[in-house]
Image (cartoon, rainbow over all chains, first blue to last red; front, side):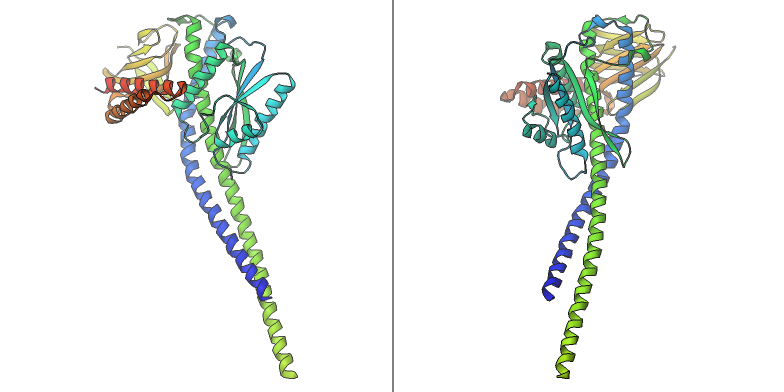
Length: 285
Length: 132
């Protein structure tokens, strides 16, 4: 009995240690979440304006004014996939990666070549392991990615699109619905498939530059802006998911400790009872 | 002077929203000045100095990348970077210039890295010229 008591005590100690770690991680995620949420709220007007402006332009322009507007047969599709750098965030990484993998599988069933551009260490590892083509390994750190990085990536991808290296560009990210729920989403960036019907401007606009070079300058900005917005959303989602996962883990640890305590006390009681019985039996004889 | 509605947004948030009398910007096709009653207009922004006149007072700013549009008399500037001259940290811009020059001199970086550094250098130079 004494042996099992010691084992239970050790077990309680280890569970307590784990719960301290999850608690610390929860606190870190909460404080990061607050900052990330601020960033999302600040960046929202930017890409909403960006989107609205571009939609108006697309509504005003005809389809042939830029290759960005013309859909062509897709031979090679590119996927930008935003995941996290670290695990222990519930289903955050798994969900968005599964979504991307499904899209890629569907493409390869249609005979479309897929190339991935992973953002975040987990995404890079995931596609590496599956032997997918990787366009660039430069963005393996999601947390280190800033506005400048997003824009230069967007410029690269738009260049590749114009050169015909890729025929479609899709972005997979995680949308932050609320503190409790984050959902993986994808959006097709190129060719531009904006809802032109809603655009307000069908009348002529004054351009200094011809439409072609104007689009060539604006579209990368647009893609970069959307990318940055999606990155902000994803970072918030990651922290939210991690916070929730760690909270659940902490609760489970508490439950386990309670059960183990009960077991420990029973074992202790059992041992005492046995000792008394032994003493009494000894005295009687 | 007649004024128009001006909105400036950047990835760091809504930068300015209010009335202005005059706006001048560096676009990809050159300097452009906008006053109230401008016809619908659209252009992409280059890198350079922007001047905004609000209530008779002209403020200078560093404005890099993005686009400007005029629609129904409303002017929208969607910029990657927009900083008033007095907000610019000159010391930081100088350091950034030095770092970018060093990185460019190292020459062992790949092409993408090289391009990033060139852009960094340009941004640092624009900031410095506006701040002075």
